[in-house]
Image 1 (cartoon, rainbow, N blue to C red):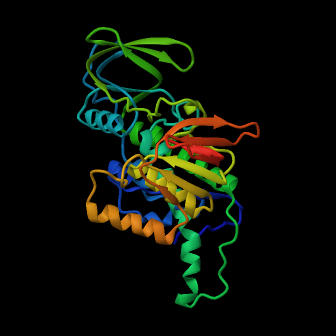
Image 2 (cartoon, one colour; image 1 turned 180 degrees about the horizontal axis):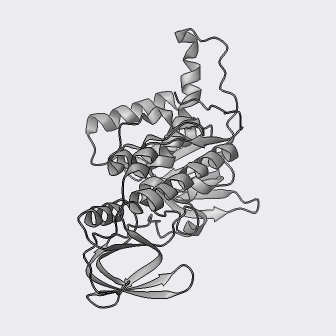
Image 3 (cartoon, rainbow, N blue to C red; image 1 turned 45 degrees about the vertical axis):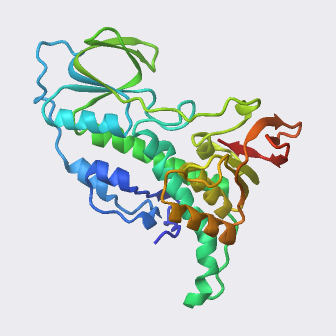
Length: 339
Protein backbone atom coordinates (compact mmCIF):
# COMPACT_ATOMS: atom_id res chain seq x y z
CA UNK A 1 0.00 0.00 0.00
CA UNK A 2 1.08 3.55 -0.66
CA UNK A 3 2.94 2.71 -3.85
CA UNK A 4 2.24 4.51 -7.11
CA UNK A 5 0.60 2.10 -9.53
CA UNK A 6 0.07 2.87 -13.20
CA UNK A 7 -2.87 1.27 -15.00
CA UNK A 8 -2.71 0.38 -18.69
CA UNK A 9 -4.36 3.69 -19.58
CA UNK A 10 -1.31 5.42 -18.06
CA UNK A 11 -3.69 7.54 -16.02
CA UNK A 12 -3.91 7.43 -12.27
CA UNK A 13 -6.09 8.86 -9.60
CA UNK A 14 -4.79 9.78 -6.21
CA UNK A 15 -6.99 8.16 -3.60
CA UNK A 16 -6.73 10.09 -0.38
CA UNK A 17 -8.70 9.49 2.75
CA UNK A 18 -8.32 11.61 5.82
CA UNK A 19 -9.89 10.73 9.12
CA UNK A 20 -11.94 13.94 9.19
CA UNK A 21 -13.21 13.42 5.65
CA UNK A 22 -14.18 9.83 6.37
CA UNK A 23 -16.02 10.87 9.52
CA UNK A 24 -17.83 13.64 7.68
CA UNK A 25 -19.10 11.29 5.03
CA UNK A 26 -19.92 8.58 7.58
CA UNK A 27 -18.14 6.19 5.26
CA UNK A 28 -16.47 2.93 6.05
CA UNK A 29 -12.86 2.86 7.21
CA UNK A 30 -10.34 3.74 4.53
CA UNK A 31 -6.63 3.14 5.02
CA UNK A 32 -4.61 6.34 5.00
CA UNK A 33 -1.67 4.51 3.51
CA UNK A 34 -3.63 3.89 0.32
CA UNK A 35 -3.44 7.52 -0.70
CA UNK A 36 -2.31 6.65 -4.19
CA UNK A 37 -4.26 4.09 -6.22
CA UNK A 38 -5.02 3.52 -9.92
CA UNK A 39 -8.04 5.10 -11.53
CA UNK A 40 -9.61 1.72 -12.17
CA UNK A 41 -10.07 1.14 -8.47
CA UNK A 42 -13.55 1.91 -7.16
CA UNK A 43 -14.03 4.40 -4.38
CA UNK A 44 -16.11 3.18 -1.44
CA UNK A 45 -17.31 6.59 -0.34
CA UNK A 46 -18.40 7.50 -3.86
CA UNK A 47 -20.44 4.28 -4.11
CA UNK A 48 -22.03 4.90 -0.74
CA UNK A 49 -22.96 8.45 -1.64
CA UNK A 50 -24.15 7.73 -5.16
CA UNK A 51 -26.43 5.00 -3.88
CA UNK A 52 -28.17 7.27 -1.39
CA UNK A 53 -31.45 8.79 -2.45
CA UNK A 54 -32.24 12.47 -2.62
CA UNK A 55 -35.64 14.05 -2.30
CA UNK A 56 -36.42 17.73 -2.51
CA UNK A 57 -40.12 17.14 -1.90
CA UNK A 58 -39.57 16.99 1.85
CA UNK A 59 -38.37 20.62 2.05
CA UNK A 60 -40.63 22.48 4.41
CA UNK A 61 -40.57 25.97 2.89
CA UNK A 62 -43.82 26.80 1.27
CA UNK A 63 -44.96 29.40 -1.16
CA UNK A 64 -43.48 29.26 -4.70
CA UNK A 65 -40.53 31.57 -4.12
CA UNK A 66 -37.40 29.69 -5.07
CA UNK A 67 -35.26 32.10 -3.02
CA UNK A 68 -37.03 31.48 0.31
CA UNK A 69 -35.17 29.03 2.56
CA UNK A 70 -35.41 27.54 6.00
CA UNK A 71 -31.65 27.97 6.39
CA UNK A 72 -28.84 29.66 4.48
CA UNK A 73 -25.26 28.69 5.25
CA UNK A 74 -22.43 31.07 4.38
CA UNK A 75 -19.28 28.97 3.99
CA UNK A 76 -18.74 25.51 2.51
CA UNK A 77 -16.12 24.10 4.85
CA UNK A 78 -16.50 21.21 7.27
CA UNK A 79 -18.86 23.10 9.57
CA UNK A 80 -21.01 24.57 6.83
CA UNK A 81 -21.29 21.32 4.90
CA UNK A 82 -22.20 19.37 8.00
CA UNK A 83 -24.80 21.89 9.17
CA UNK A 84 -26.48 22.16 5.77
CA UNK A 85 -26.50 18.42 5.12
CA UNK A 86 -27.99 17.53 8.50
CA UNK A 87 -30.60 20.31 8.33
CA UNK A 88 -31.64 19.21 4.86
CA UNK A 89 -31.87 15.65 6.11
CA UNK A 90 -34.46 16.80 8.63
CA UNK A 91 -36.57 18.35 5.89
CA UNK A 92 -35.31 21.92 5.77
CA UNK A 93 -34.84 23.79 2.52
CA UNK A 94 -31.17 24.79 2.61
CA UNK A 95 -28.82 26.87 0.47
CA UNK A 96 -25.05 26.85 1.00
CA UNK A 97 -22.91 29.71 -0.29
CA UNK A 98 -19.23 29.13 -1.06
CA UNK A 99 -16.81 31.53 -2.74
CA UNK A 100 -15.48 28.96 -5.18
CA UNK A 101 -16.34 25.36 -5.91
CA UNK A 102 -12.92 24.28 -7.18
CA UNK A 103 -9.61 24.54 -5.34
CA UNK A 104 -6.77 26.88 -6.26
CA UNK A 105 -6.16 30.62 -6.38
CA UNK A 106 -7.40 33.09 -5.35
CA UNK A 107 -9.10 31.55 -2.29
CA UNK A 108 -7.22 28.22 -2.39
CA UNK A 109 -9.85 26.67 -0.17
CA UNK A 110 -13.11 25.75 -1.88
CA UNK A 111 -16.10 23.49 -1.32
CA UNK A 112 -15.08 21.06 1.42
CA UNK A 113 -13.08 23.66 3.34
CA UNK A 114 -9.50 23.82 4.55
CA UNK A 115 -9.20 20.11 5.33
CA UNK A 116 -10.05 18.95 1.83
CA UNK A 117 -8.31 21.69 -0.16
CA UNK A 118 -5.35 23.12 1.75
CA UNK A 119 -5.22 21.07 4.92
CA UNK A 120 -5.50 17.47 6.03
CA UNK A 121 -5.86 15.74 2.67
CA UNK A 122 -3.10 17.36 0.54
CA UNK A 123 -0.86 17.62 3.60
CA UNK A 124 -1.11 13.89 4.24
CA UNK A 125 -0.29 13.20 0.62
CA UNK A 126 2.86 15.27 1.12
CA UNK A 127 3.61 13.38 4.34
CA UNK A 128 3.33 10.07 2.49
CA UNK A 129 5.66 11.35 -0.24
CA UNK A 130 8.19 12.56 2.31
CA UNK A 131 8.26 9.20 4.09
CA UNK A 132 9.45 7.15 1.13
CA UNK A 133 13.19 7.92 1.40
CA UNK A 134 13.21 6.84 5.05
CA UNK A 135 11.20 3.71 4.36
CA UNK A 136 13.45 2.76 1.45
CA UNK A 137 16.57 3.26 3.57
CA UNK A 138 15.22 0.61 5.97
CA UNK A 139 14.17 -1.81 3.23
CA UNK A 140 17.37 -3.86 3.28
CA UNK A 141 16.84 -4.69 6.92
CA UNK A 142 13.58 -6.35 5.91
CA UNK A 143 15.08 -8.36 3.08
CA UNK A 144 14.45 -5.94 0.22
CA UNK A 145 17.69 -5.52 -1.71
CA UNK A 146 18.42 -2.93 -4.37
CA UNK A 147 15.77 -0.39 -3.34
CA UNK A 148 16.79 3.20 -4.05
CA UNK A 149 15.00 6.47 -3.24
CA UNK A 150 15.05 7.64 -6.86
CA UNK A 151 14.27 11.32 -7.53
CA UNK A 152 11.26 13.28 -6.39
CA UNK A 153 9.29 15.06 -9.12
CA UNK A 154 7.47 18.02 -7.53
CA UNK A 155 5.48 18.89 -10.65
CA UNK A 156 4.29 15.32 -11.09
CA UNK A 157 3.26 15.10 -7.46
CA UNK A 158 1.34 18.38 -7.69
CA UNK A 159 -0.45 17.18 -10.80
CA UNK A 160 -1.66 14.05 -8.99
CA UNK A 161 -2.51 16.03 -5.87
CA UNK A 162 -4.58 18.53 -7.84
CA UNK A 163 -6.47 15.74 -9.58
CA UNK A 164 -7.42 14.22 -6.24
CA UNK A 165 -8.56 17.50 -4.69
CA UNK A 166 -10.63 18.24 -7.81
CA UNK A 167 -12.26 14.82 -7.43
CA UNK A 168 -13.09 15.57 -3.81
CA UNK A 169 -14.55 18.98 -4.72
CA UNK A 170 -16.89 17.16 -7.09
CA UNK A 171 -17.77 14.57 -4.42
CA UNK A 172 -18.75 17.29 -1.98
CA UNK A 173 -20.70 19.33 -4.50
CA UNK A 174 -22.48 16.56 -6.40
CA UNK A 175 -22.80 13.78 -3.85
CA UNK A 176 -22.42 14.99 -0.26
CA UNK A 177 -24.50 18.12 -0.77
CA UNK A 178 -26.32 17.31 -3.99
CA UNK A 179 -27.71 14.01 -2.77
CA UNK A 180 -28.74 15.67 0.48
CA UNK A 181 -30.87 18.17 -1.44
CA UNK A 182 -28.74 21.20 -0.53
CA UNK A 183 -28.59 23.96 -3.13
CA UNK A 184 -24.99 25.14 -3.61
CA UNK A 185 -24.48 28.75 -4.67
CA UNK A 186 -21.03 29.87 -5.85
CA UNK A 187 -20.46 33.39 -4.62
CA UNK A 188 -20.05 35.59 -1.56
CA UNK A 189 -22.84 36.12 0.92
CA UNK A 190 -23.46 39.03 3.25
CA UNK A 191 -26.25 39.76 5.71
CA UNK A 192 -28.89 42.21 4.54
CA UNK A 193 -31.05 42.35 7.64
CA UNK A 194 -32.15 39.54 9.97
CA UNK A 195 -33.83 37.41 7.33
CA UNK A 196 -31.99 38.13 4.07
CA UNK A 197 -28.63 37.16 2.63
CA UNK A 198 -27.35 38.98 -0.43
CA UNK A 199 -25.15 36.88 -2.69
CA UNK A 200 -22.67 38.22 -5.22
CA UNK A 201 -22.54 35.22 -7.51
CA UNK A 202 -19.45 34.11 -9.42
CA UNK A 203 -21.19 34.83 -12.74
CA UNK A 204 -21.55 38.50 -11.79
CA UNK A 205 -25.23 38.35 -10.89
CA UNK A 206 -26.73 39.15 -7.49
CA UNK A 207 -29.31 37.14 -5.58
CA UNK A 208 -31.22 37.91 -2.40
CA UNK A 209 -32.06 34.82 -0.37
CA UNK A 210 -34.79 35.07 2.22
CA UNK A 211 -34.11 32.81 5.16
CA UNK A 212 -35.50 31.88 8.56
CA UNK A 213 -32.06 30.93 9.88
CA UNK A 214 -28.54 31.87 8.87
CA UNK A 215 -25.35 29.99 9.72
CA UNK A 216 -22.05 31.82 9.30
CA UNK A 217 -19.20 29.35 8.83
CA UNK A 218 -16.67 31.29 6.79
CA UNK A 219 -13.45 30.00 8.34
CA UNK A 220 -10.28 32.10 8.48
CA UNK A 221 -7.04 33.04 6.76
CA UNK A 222 -3.42 32.46 7.81
CA UNK A 223 -1.83 35.34 9.71
CA UNK A 224 1.47 36.92 8.69
CA UNK A 225 3.55 39.03 11.08
CA UNK A 226 3.61 42.74 10.26
CA UNK A 227 7.26 43.00 9.25
CA UNK A 228 8.92 44.50 6.15
CA UNK A 229 8.90 42.05 3.27
CA UNK A 230 6.09 39.87 4.61
CA UNK A 231 4.43 40.19 1.21
CA UNK A 232 7.18 37.99 -0.24
CA UNK A 233 6.34 35.07 2.04
CA UNK A 234 3.85 32.24 1.61
CA UNK A 235 1.42 30.52 3.95
CA UNK A 236 0.04 27.02 4.33
CA UNK A 237 -2.31 27.90 1.44
CA UNK A 238 0.21 28.80 -1.25
CA UNK A 239 2.68 26.03 -0.46
CA UNK A 240 0.31 23.52 -2.05
CA UNK A 241 0.49 25.41 -5.36
CA UNK A 242 4.16 26.27 -5.79
CA UNK A 243 5.31 25.58 -9.33
CA UNK A 244 8.80 24.59 -8.19
CA UNK A 245 10.01 22.82 -5.08
CA UNK A 246 12.05 25.28 -3.01
CA UNK A 247 15.57 23.96 -2.51
CA UNK A 248 15.88 26.11 0.61
CA UNK A 249 12.95 27.07 2.80
CA UNK A 250 12.64 28.94 6.10
CA UNK A 251 9.59 28.02 8.19
CA UNK A 252 8.64 30.68 10.74
CA UNK A 253 6.55 29.48 13.66
CA UNK A 254 6.37 26.80 16.31
CA UNK A 255 2.86 25.41 16.02
CA UNK A 256 2.00 21.98 14.69
CA UNK A 257 1.53 23.27 11.13
CA UNK A 258 5.03 24.76 11.11
CA UNK A 259 6.52 21.55 12.52
CA UNK A 260 4.60 19.44 10.02
CA UNK A 261 5.73 21.40 6.98
CA UNK A 262 9.32 21.59 8.21
CA UNK A 263 9.34 17.79 8.46
CA UNK A 264 7.55 17.34 5.13
CA UNK A 265 9.91 19.57 3.18
CA UNK A 266 12.93 17.95 4.85
CA UNK A 267 11.60 14.55 3.81
CA UNK A 268 11.19 15.76 0.23
CA UNK A 269 14.81 16.89 0.11
CA UNK A 270 14.66 20.64 0.74
CA UNK A 271 17.08 22.40 3.09
CA UNK A 272 14.87 23.51 5.97
CA UNK A 273 15.35 26.10 8.70
CA UNK A 274 12.70 26.29 11.42
CA UNK A 275 12.60 29.56 13.38
CA UNK A 276 10.61 29.92 16.56
CA UNK A 277 10.54 32.89 18.92
CA UNK A 278 10.29 30.74 22.07
CA UNK A 279 12.49 28.23 23.86
CA UNK A 280 10.69 25.19 22.46
CA UNK A 281 8.02 24.71 19.80
CA UNK A 282 4.46 23.36 20.31
CA UNK A 283 3.67 25.52 23.31
CA UNK A 284 0.71 24.12 25.22
CA UNK A 285 1.35 20.52 24.17
CA UNK A 286 2.63 17.77 26.45
CA UNK A 287 6.13 18.69 27.63
CA UNK A 288 7.60 15.20 27.24
CA UNK A 289 6.27 15.02 23.70
CA UNK A 290 7.71 18.44 22.84
CA UNK A 291 11.15 17.50 24.10
CA UNK A 292 11.05 14.12 22.40
CA UNK A 293 10.09 15.70 19.09
CA UNK A 294 12.96 18.17 19.40
CA UNK A 295 15.34 15.27 20.02
CA UNK A 296 14.03 13.32 17.05
CA UNK A 297 14.20 16.31 14.71
CA UNK A 298 17.72 17.09 15.88
CA UNK A 299 19.07 13.57 15.52
CA UNK A 300 17.07 12.14 12.61
CA UNK A 301 16.44 15.07 10.25
CA UNK A 302 18.50 17.78 8.59
CA UNK A 303 16.23 20.55 9.88
CA UNK A 304 18.11 23.52 11.34
CA UNK A 305 16.17 24.30 14.52
CA UNK A 306 16.57 27.92 15.61
CA UNK A 307 14.79 28.69 18.86
CA UNK A 308 14.55 32.16 20.45
CA UNK A 309 14.78 33.48 16.91
CA UNK A 310 12.47 35.99 15.26
CA UNK A 311 12.66 37.46 11.74
CA UNK A 312 12.53 41.24 11.55
CA UNK A 313 12.72 41.67 7.77
CA UNK A 314 12.45 39.69 4.52
CA UNK A 315 14.53 40.99 1.62
CA UNK A 316 13.88 39.97 -1.98
CA UNK A 317 17.13 39.60 -3.90
CA UNK A 318 17.73 40.37 -7.57
CA UNK A 319 17.84 36.66 -8.47
CA UNK A 320 14.43 36.06 -6.89
CA UNK A 321 15.76 34.44 -3.73
CA UNK A 322 14.96 35.79 -0.28
CA UNK A 323 17.07 36.82 2.70
CA UNK A 324 15.63 36.50 6.18
CA UNK A 325 17.13 39.01 8.60
CA UNK A 326 16.60 38.05 12.24
CA UNK A 327 16.26 40.36 15.23
CA UNK A 328 19.79 39.45 16.34
CA UNK A 329 21.22 40.42 12.94
CA UNK A 330 21.76 37.02 11.37
CA UNK A 331 20.88 36.47 7.71
CA UNK A 332 19.66 33.32 6.00
CA UNK A 333 19.20 33.03 2.24
CA UNK A 334 16.41 30.84 0.94
CA UNK A 335 13.98 30.33 -1.92
CA UNK A 336 10.75 30.53 0.09
CA UNK A 337 9.66 31.68 3.54
CA UNK A 338 6.64 29.93 5.01
CA UNK A 339 4.80 31.80 7.76
